[in-house]
Amino acid sequence: MARISLEEALERYGIARWGDGFFSVSRQGELLVLPTREPRRAVSLPALVDRLRAEGTGTPLLFRFPQVLEARVRELADAFAAAREEFNYAGAYRPAYPLKVNQKRVVVETLFRAGRDHGMALEAGSRAELMLALGMGLPPGTMVIVNGYKDRRTLRLAVLGARLGLDVVVVLEKLFEVDRLLEAFADAGEGPLPLVGLRTRLYARGAGRWWKSSGITAKFGLTTSSLLAAIERLRAAGHGDRVRFLHFHLGSQIPEIRRLKAAFREGARTWARLRKMGVPLEYLDVGGGLAVDYDGSRTSSDASRNYSLEEYANDVVFFTGEVATEEGVPHPVLLSESGRALTAHHALLVADVLGRIGADPPPPEDVEVPPDAPLVLRELATLREQIGAKTWREYWHDAVEHRDEMVTLFNIGLIDLPQRALAEQLFWEIARRALAWARKERTLPPEFEQLEKALHEKYIVNFSVFQAAPDHWALDQLFPVVPLRRLREEPTVRASLVDITCDSDGAIERFIDVKDVREALDLHEPEGCPGGRPYDLALCLLGAYQDVMGDQHNLLGAPAEVHVTVDEEGNPRIERVLPPEPAAGVLADFGWDAEELAARAEEALRGRGTAGVDADLLADYRAALAAGTYLSPE
Ligand SMILES: *Cc1c(COP(=O)(O)O)cnc(C)c1O
Image (tube, rainbow, N blue to C red; front, side, top):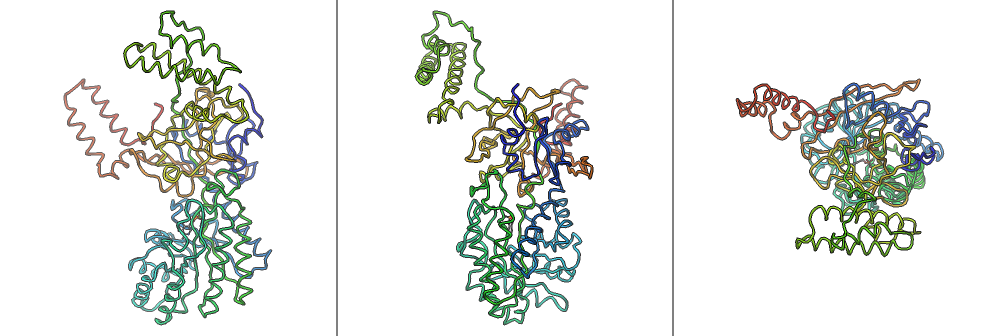
């Protein structure tokens, strides 16, 4: 087996680029996670998988590294602190965590604990998210931003939040919400009330996949005229002094800094002009959009970003400060709602390769084609034998012709099935050999690109795209995929991935690349893993949105979940193991009661087969209800 250098190993799957210091490769070719970014505290992911398997928790496994969340919060706060110092910015900065990005308890609690010293706020976009924020025991004075569409009930909860001592900000998205809010204020009696925020709809537009969140036709935000009308109404009702907060949001994953700069300028100017009109604004919230470099290319492709965290922070601070100073108003307290950037890196899925789907294997070199076999068969055998440096292109064309002819002959009954099988095997072997020659050309001839695709293998992976990475299916979003082991071994197979759902969309056929998008990954023979282990793949950067948006297509539910930290000495600690969602649970979500299903099966079975075996079969049914929904090795 050919060995490759550590540098090559890091380069091949782009780990050094998209990994952002959280991922690396060991000398032994294992995928490493660095939860704190310190190389001396690196964790071997395959060693963890081995340990969990030995303890009875098999793949697929969702890994969560809470320390990655802590590192990201720190980094975001540090970037803004440095920017404020550099540009003599007088206002503070607070990170706000938008709950919709990942509402899992461990994620929210870890982020909040890490962000508390930096004045972290939480953003709720629905009533249930607001209920989460109000009930999680936040310390008094914590800011809770209420975005999204709001009904009377939601506004009552916002008032409750203010009574709990939280700095609740109700951000008005639509003019009709003003009257509703005023009613809630009128019904609130004596006591603290929420502050009012205004969400402005900027002219500046995002880019990338989520640009629809902004621009003049956006679903959210007040136009300039409704912004002014809202202020008038609030003032008329005697609540003008509560308007302290201006908010905008350009959309998620903005790959181009140019778009963000335009929004920062427009937002800052709006803030300053409102302030000069006597609106007592204190806060400016620049929303989300801080992108994650999923493909590691550092470009303005949808899967990337052409700027760094530092550049982002510098631009927010610089433009806001510059405009405020020029307009002669105070520097606002800045907030950003950077959800994706805080969470994407902390979660990944490890899943085992179950098998492969490939073209026919080559026929033996010495296969005999009898002299009385149909001419096409003998021709194909000769082409296979003689294809070479000078003839590959011509012979490939001949092979295609013979293959078509062979099918015609089969359809009229002149070729039997064993002959057809041999012809197909010969054809694919000629294809492989022609392609090998074609790849030596400076650029791959177009007709061979198609062939390249047809010759990719497909690895069957024990997971569901719909559950693990729904944005890949819905939006073509790209996520890095890396083998867990053998990273210093030269890959010999080009393969794309299919999942275990019965849906042809349940596949990954587009992969990250520095320059472009790849249609296949370079992988290893799945059979050759040491100790007979499965060939495991890691699907990375799943911590934002994917983790909470996955569905139960084909009744495949959540996989087992593991929380891992690393101690000062670099020893990994498995903090928690959550079992996979059982089949009974997934069935219950669709109205099927597990007990009832089992009882019906039992009743129908009565006295039909061998008593002992039947009892065992039924016990298996019950055990399967309690087990997870993915394939297991036993
Ligand atoms: C979704 C959303 C965010 C999160 O955006 P990211 O790009 O994930 O940081 C922030 N603010 C609002 C209002 C949102 O709707």
